[in-house]
Amino acid sequence: MRTVHSLKELRTILRGYRLQDKTIGLVPTMGNLHEGHISLVRKACEAADVVVTSIFVNPMQFGASEDLDKYPRTLADDQEKLEAAGNTLVFAPSIDEVYPEGLAKQTQVVVPDVSDGHCGGSRPGHFEGVATVVTILFNMVQPDIAVFGEKDFQQLAVIRKLVQDLCIPVEVIGAPTVRDEDGLAKSSRNSYLSEEERHIAPVVYRTLEDTARKLGDGRSDFPALENEAKNALIQAGLRPDYLNIVNSDTLKPATSEDTNLTVLAAAFLGTTRLIDNVTMTRGDLAKRNS
Ligand code: PAF
Image 1 (cartoon, helix red, strand yellow):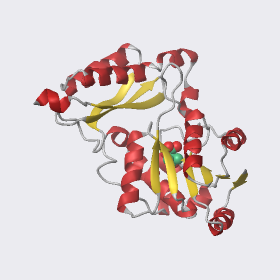
Image 2 (cartoon, rainbow, N blue to C red):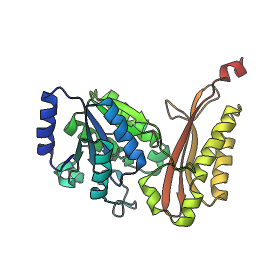
Image 3 (tube, rainbow, N blue to C red):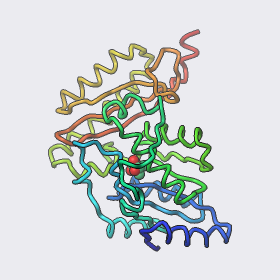
Image 4 (cartoon, rainbow, N blue to C red):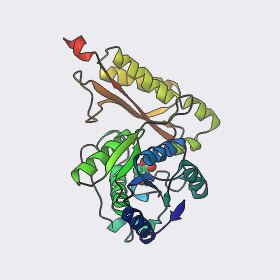
C-alpha cells in the first residue's frame, strides 16, 4: 500500500489504474482510524477495484472553539490498519495542497436546507466546511464510489444532496454505524473520554433505542418524547446539545404521517461532544391510522 501527499502523485497513480479499467473507491477520513472507518474501507473494497482512503484533518469544518488542535494525528498507526484492511492507496495531503490560497480565499460549497438545524445549527459553518472539502476530494480523486458512515447522519444527507445538485458522477454509499459491545458508537472523539465518562457514554445509544421503541409502540407526541429522552441524558450526567425526532428523508421534524423516522442526538459528556442516531420504520402505522 502506498501513501502519497501530493495531488500530482495521486493523479499519476490513479491515471494508471484508470488505463487498466479499474474502478476507484474513496473513503474520506480525518484519520485516527477505528473499526468504524475500517468497515467503510472494507465496504469500499467490495464496491471498487482500487480504494483510496484520504486522511485530512479539515480546518474548514472546525469552529474557532472546537478541537482542531487536539484532534489526534496518527498517520503511522492509520497506515497499518489500512494495509490490513486491503486499502490500496492513502492520500494524506497537507493543508496547502487542499487549500493552496488559504482558507480565506477558498471557494466554498453551501448545501442549503439539509445543512440547517441539528449539527448544522450548533456548529455554524461546519457543513460548509465538510461540503467544500468533500467536493475538493471528489475532484482530486474522481472516484466511482465513495463510502461515508451513517453515524454522521446529517453529513451523509448533505453529501448526497451536493452530489445530486452538482451532478458529481459518484455513487455515495452509506455504511452502518459500528458500535462497541455496550452500544457506544465508534468515534475518534471517544478517546477524549475519561474512564468514568466512557462508562456513562453508552447511555446516548440506549436513550435513542428507548425513544425508537416508544415510537414503535405508536407514540406520536414527539416533543414530549424528545423531552423524556433529553431528561434521561441529563439524569445520566450528559448535557444534550439537541435530540430531535425527524423524518429520515427530509431531516425535518417528524409528523404523525411519517413512517421512516430517525432520532438524532448530540450531547456533551464533560467537554466531549458525542453524536449518534437511530432510524426506525413505523411499519404498521398505516394499519393503526385506518
Ligand atoms: O466524517 C469525517 O470524518 C469528515 O467530516 C470528512 C467526511 C472526512 C470530511 O472532512
